[in-house]
Every structure is written in C-alpha cells, then in structure tokens.
Amino acid sequence: MPRLRWLIQTLVAFGTNAYLLFPFGGSVIYQGPLKAVCHPGLNCYSCPGALLSCPVGAMQNFMAGLRFSTGGLPQAGVLVIGYLGFIGSVVGRLTCGWMCPFGFIQDLIYKIPTRKFSLWAPLRWVKYAVMVVMVVAMPIFLVDNSGLGHPWFCKLICPAGTLEGAMPLLLLKPSLWGTVGLYFWNKLTLLILILIAAILISRFFCRVICPLGAFYSLFSRISLVQLEFVEGNCVECGACTRKCPTGVVPNKEFDSRECIMCLKCVDSCHFRALDFGIRRPPGKPVKVKRATSPL
Amino acid sequence: MPKRFLWLIILFTAFFIMGINTGDLIYLLNLGNTICLACIGVG
Image (cartoon, rainbow over all chains, first blue to last red; front, side, top):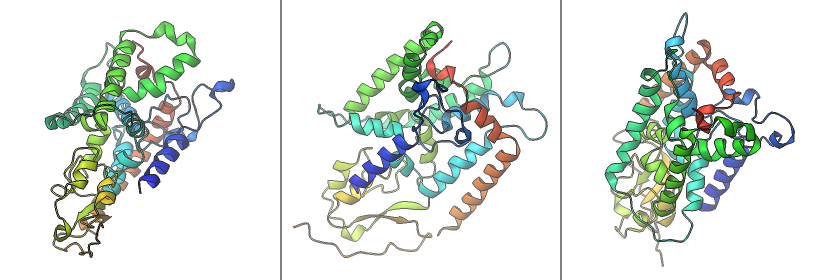
C-alpha cells in the first residue's frame, strides 16, 4: 500500500503539472481548457507547469468579485463548492493523503533525518479559522477603493503559491522582480518557516493551516469511504498510532477529522483491527475478520 | 450505502450544475489563464 500511495502521489503531482512548453517561448503558464477544472488538492495555478486551477485560489476570487455579480444568480463559486463537496462526500480527506502535491512535498521533506516533534493538538483548529476568515470573509469584506476584494490567503500565506508559482515565475520572467514587494518577502519567509516546520512535524501545513484540508475534514464522518475499526481484533499495541502522520489514535478515533486516509495504520496493524471500505448505514455492524498472527 | 451520502451527492451535483449555469466555468477558465499576482506577492 505505501508504494501504491507514493506512485499515485507522484503521478498526480507530475501529471497535473505537465505543461512543459513554458521554457520554449510559448506562454509562461498553461492557458488551455483544462484550467476550467480545479485540482482536487492544493496546487498553484500560476505554477508554469500547472494544467488545472487551484480550488482555494478560485474560491477566493469568486468571493472577491461577489459584489460585482450582475443579473440573475450571483457568481458565488457554487461550481467549486459543488466540485469539492462531491469529492469530499465520496473520499473525504483521502485526497489530502493521496492526491495533494503540497502534501506530497511535505511527505518527502519529512523524510529528512532529524529529531521529530509532535504537534500541540489545539493548533489543528487554526485551519478552520483560516478557511472562514481568509478564504471567505476577508475577500468579501476587505476591499480596495474600487470595491474589489483580494485573495488574501494567496496574498499573505499560501506556501504552495510561493514555491510553485512565485519562485519559478520570477526565474522565468525577471521583469516581474520590479513588481514584487513586501508581500513576496512575507510569503517567502512563511514558506521557509512552514517547510522547516514540515521537516520537524509531520504534515504541519495540512494539520494547522490548510483551508482545503479544513473543508474536506467536514466530510470525514460522513464520506462514502472510511477507515473501519474491528474492536474485537484490537490488542492496543499502539502500532497504528506510532505510524499515523497526523497524530490520530486510529483505534480510538478512526473517523477523526485529522485522518488523511494514508492507510499507514491499516498496513501497520497485524491483527486486522483496521480496514478501509465503504461506510455502512448506521446500526449495521462492521464485518469481523479473522485476525492473523504477526509471528 | 448511507442515505446521507446520496443526498450530499445530489446537493453538490446541483451546486455544480448551478455553477455552470451562472457562468462560473468561464470565470474559472479566465482566472486560470492569467498569472496570479497575489500568488507571486505583488502589491
């Protein structure tokens, strides 16, 4: 299973950033019809290779331009909500564990051998505040003189934007250097801090800041697929807890909002107390599987 | 399969279709085809 996850993460990261004409005199970013589709994970649409749009950037821009909607129904980004909601309803935060390019980067840099730390649990609530305040409220209410809002999360925080968008574009188009200001240096500093934190604390950005992870986590307890726990098979050895990259205790909170369904806990359990499958209707018990000896 | 899941799928599919009809798709396409200055840190 871990190899399959690495393979899918690699394929998604490179497959959705597969525009290779940018160094050869074409457009510096991809400008084709695929940009009408959002990436399921956090991936900057200004990355020179990006084929898909960023859902967080798109949502903020819809909010920022909400008051300029004319006629009929307002353009409130219901397309993006529908798209992300559909994904969340089916797979929940599995997207974070298997398909997010920035999550993949964090998985890679966490492999750097150094002393590791655990996350102070209350920090996980920060991402919900980021989602509500920076992705929805600030773009709607914090407007400039012309009445136009801004994508404040992209502007102030987004490390994916700095790493995948700003840095390659500034290298490819030196003329952009004249336009960068305090916002860029603020974001660069934050990117460095977030990457250092992600080396020391597993999936730091996903657990503390990511507004997309916060949105998907709303579906963790109702999504179609879920982790299953067979209580009778559990010997409480703690192997699943030691393997979990997001600090979940799988045998106590198997439908935790923090679970990114990487399935490391399922692999680590020799007693088949954890499994992965389709959610059953309430009241229908999980099928008990025969435990196998780890010896 | 829980009923709640089916209702969510219907709801979000309706949102998606509504978004197509309010012009969100064109807006998204235009947005994705321009360099995001906020991402770069211009301002």
